[in-house]
Amino acid sequence: MTITVRRASPKDAAAYARFMNDPAVFAGLMQMPHTDEDIWRIRLTEACDPARIDLPLVAVVGGEVVGSSGLHPVGPALRRRHAMMLGISVAREAQGRGVGTALMAAMCDYADRWIGALRLELTVYTDNERAIGLYRKFGFEIEGTFKGYALRDGRYVDAYAMARLHPDPPRVAGNS
Ligand SMILES: CC(C)(COP(=O)(O)OP(=O)(O)OC[C@H]1O[C@@H](n2cnc3c(N)ncnc32)[C@H](O)[C@@H]1OP(=O)(O)O)[C@@H](O)C(=O)NCCC(=O)NCCS
Image 1 (spheres, rainbow, N blue to C red):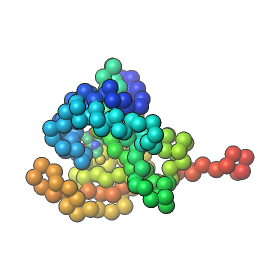
Image 2: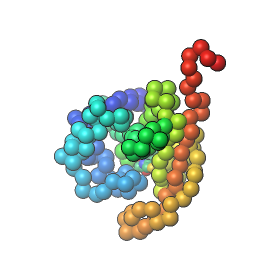
Image 3: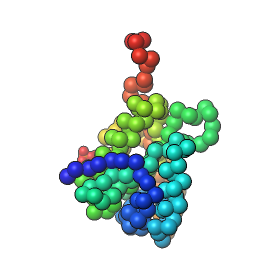
Image 4: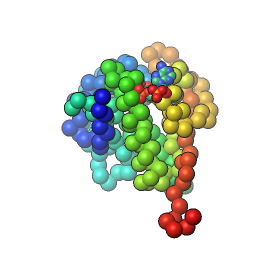
């Protein structure tokens, strides 16, 4: 299976609406039921603005967008410019086939080698074993637990704070 990763575009709104409206996807995230193509077009138009430093990516298999991910600034504080927040989602039918791995590899490469981010952070529900397995594979560690972090399908559920520090921060060329 060939997986291509590229920058997302507002033209991907229909694909986002299709896979994000599935409880197997949105329930694992902070997304809501009943999103549609119009909502995703507005969000993607904002996220894809070249003036923003966010990195919105999609994964494409056989011409179909089957996954998305993003790197986002954690906020406006200058003293946290070394940190970026990460999110990822893969369509139900494409899960467990390496799409998440391809998106994570692209985001870690971009963070490590092109923007010099020192710290990547995320939250994940404590029962999302596949996501936790994926994050551990890329060097993320659990740093703590948020109790009753978010409402998910009628219950407040816990989430882990996970983070990954740059394994080999960049140096000035020529200075070993
Ligand atoms: C979590 C998610 C992004 C993972 O993407 P994916 O394409 O399914 O993952 P991959 O097929 O690349 O698997 C990656 C790794 O996850 C781990 N993994 C996969 N299935 C697992 C399972 N059932 N239990 C534990 N770890 C598992 C493995 O380490 C695997 O790597 P390996 O195959 O080299 O051993 C995807 O399943 C998804 O979008 N789920 C719904 C939305 C979501 O929960 N997003 C994360 C929010 S924090």
